[in-house]
Image (cartoon, rainbow, N blue to C red; front, side, top):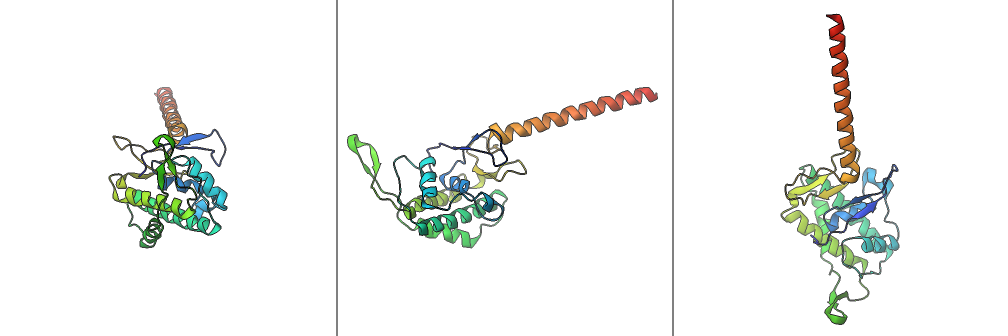
Length: 213
């Protein structure tokens, strides 16, 4: 699981202000390009440029700039959908689907991008990394996540209509929301309104009881 955390600025599909979201792991960032089932309407992985653009925004180190084929885009969708099913199963304590584990394993078997020394002993990449190499890095990150210390901390956002999945890397392990900017604040607002409504109803019932006395 990658240590470099950047996060994405997301535009809510239903409108509203953009918000920052950190999935906590490279492999879960791929799910921001859509997924299977009801997530298919948000599919954003159609062309090689879509995967290249995602790489530039992801927590992969800068400068990778892969060359991606259409066949590798299809492989990326297959890996993305498998990762969603695996992460969702783990979030809800279900058995991990064997077929999806096999998809991740096949992707991880490809060689990952190759780093090398650049000027001044800086890190750069061997040019011409393929889409398969990028997907290998994602799949290997998934293997680390699902077999590592955060394997039981994969969560789905606590808001009922939010399907974002993330790794809870907080020290107490109590992260509930995809983002406090969005779902966390909305939950607080709803709870506050519910308390006020309850207090107002309680006050009205008390007044009515006093009138009847």
